[in-house]
Length: 289
Image 1: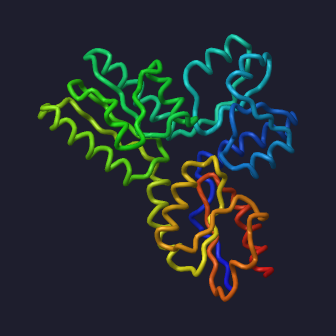
Image 2: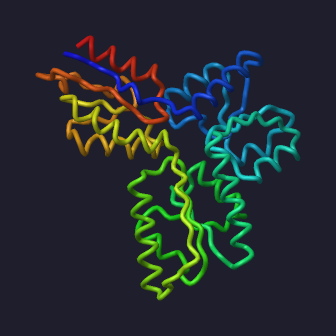
Image 3: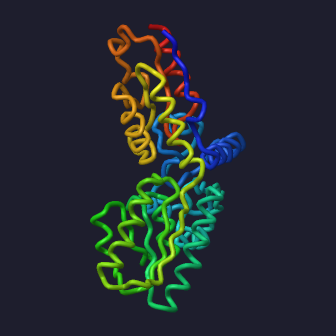
């Protein structure tokens, strides 16, 4: 039985940087607070917790003083930086540069829309850490959409600037734009003040076609991801659409030996939040069968 790991799977550069920054600080001090899971993968969070990383939420942040706190790749809203100043917290900012660029773009768009009574719309997952940071650039006024029905939240008589969470699927973004344009027509606004910004990270958008090819090349696919990863849940469905024998697993304990009866090729792949060491561990276990 041949077992191969998808070379394009694993951490994106934003996550790699955040983990590198965390490990450097933990080597020096042995303790570091992190605002939310550093990555949406429970096994990687467990590994870093053993080194001294302490995961906290935003309510707990307000209670901490005179400490170091890591801002993960997802970025944070302005309110987090205000609390840090008030509590004498040293923020170690590992925000992904792609996310920071998007935050700035949305902030500029918001200021523009304020002048003309317009709206900021973000295609993303409500409550997601990155989306919370993006909405924070608009004083909490941005409209979040994630499905066709959500487009009814928008006022199609007003100007509109449309953005996307960096890890959303490109096909979903395209469908959303199509729906927005159709609703402008239905509202009788035939010349709307509407600007769309495709702000999906290129690392994410390029991963989908490569993953489809990888999934189709194997008898069975093990997709390794944490259940909290929206990117992982989406990419799993991408694999499954090409290969129905795609199994979603989060750790080696999820593997069932009976899956591999009469199987010649096994592919192991994962999300942008899946560590390579975990995929390698999974591959070794399958090879032992």
